[in-house]
Length: 276
Ligand code: ADP
Ligand code: MG
Image (cartoon, rainbow, N blue to C red; front, side, top):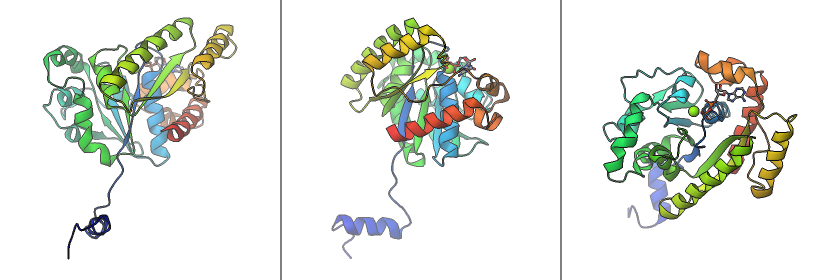
């Protein structure tokens, strides 16, 4: 038999060998250079919902603070290796990834050692593409890879944007948020041009929203003017369960499934699946 005479035969061979050609994961980066805007909370809880909805999810923590790592109850003192070891080329991503007790969720953890990477990567080859290259071999194993960023536009966030298909910007409805957003979008434009033409703004996610504040509604109106169609329909309001869940090392879906926070992030996860 002429094995690879045409595409049809190639596909037949794949199936016969039990190897089905698999789609690669979509990579979604959560970034905002401002701290405390709900990046980690959003990554942890959207990932949990995507997992519950049957999607295979890898969460990559690229923040030395490791809030997302501990948000899934993973110890920051892991011996298996962290994203730092992966970025400096000491460990393969597959060896540092940990499975969790949560449905369909694996995590590539971070801890404070990552703080040194910013400095070490300055001299390294392919310093902007290290994360993208490291994730490539594990992409067929997941439907979504969600990346949490530190609160800066340094080399770690750049790596996360170079790897991404889509960017989600969690932000609070405050006056200065708009300025920060324009600055972030300028960086995105440059990264798109130089390194990653497929990078798209998937959406702006309003967090800790209080619709009773005049300022919030004003900022929201302003946002809609410039980013129409890019704002998630679901805004995340303040919910105490969302702030309690991390101290139990659980996404809110597992901490209190019937809370407002769980319902809101579940809706956002569904919207994200539509967008990407
Ligand atoms: P970032 O990752 O952008 O620094 P976090 O996700 O860590 O932000 O959120 C900052 C703080 O706000 C955390 O203490 C978190 O628990 C809390 N928080 C985030 N979103 C909400 C919310 N919707 N309701 C209440 N607390 C929230
Ligand atoms: Mg964070």
